[in-house]
Amino acid sequence: MHLQPGIPAPALELEDWKGERHTLACYRGRRVWLAFFRYASCPLCNLRVHRMIQRWDVWAESDFQLLAVFQSPPSSIAEYVGEQRPPFPLLGDPDEVYYGLYGCDASLRAYVAPTNAAMLAKAAGAGFLPGRMEGTKTRVPADFFIDEEGILTRCFYGKTISDHVPFEDVDDWLGG
Image 1 (tube, rainbow, N blue to C red):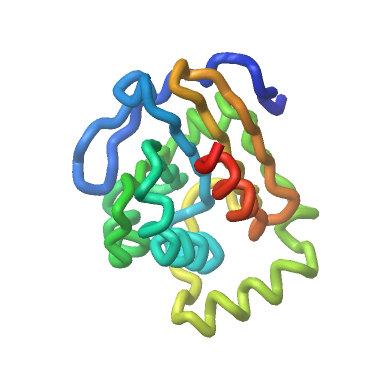
Image 2: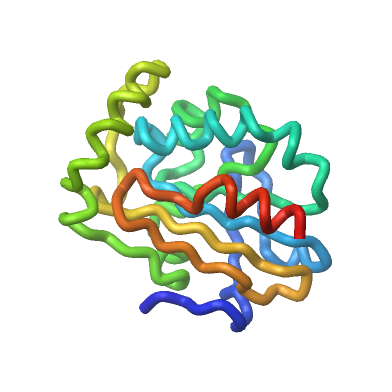
């Protein structure tokens, strides 16, 4: 079941690819963007992280924390997406516990959607090629904006495996 804005975000405690523990409670008093990705070697996910890193200088002026969750163990995150050295934590949820708590979807229709092909081509063009698939193969990304009190203010559930909250929405949220 999808979560709705206005309710407390489910508690989260995960280890990042560097071995540090992160909880939502640690970030109380700050806004949090919680982004659920697929597996660590997913070309689409790596392209998205790459684009997030490119925008980081603008976003870093805002008081918020970005937490990126992958359905891979920290060792795979380090091997793949960690190579990009993002300025935000990459968290591993290989048992997909938090994917379930946040109502993240898995869908064959989303996996085979024609729009994914264009994004896969862009990912390949940027040097992000498929690697080891881990976790639910048909996982669909999701993004959540959480306010300073731990309340969900935006719940975005992707329609395809390449669909995330638009960056324009992130910009609006950070500017507001």
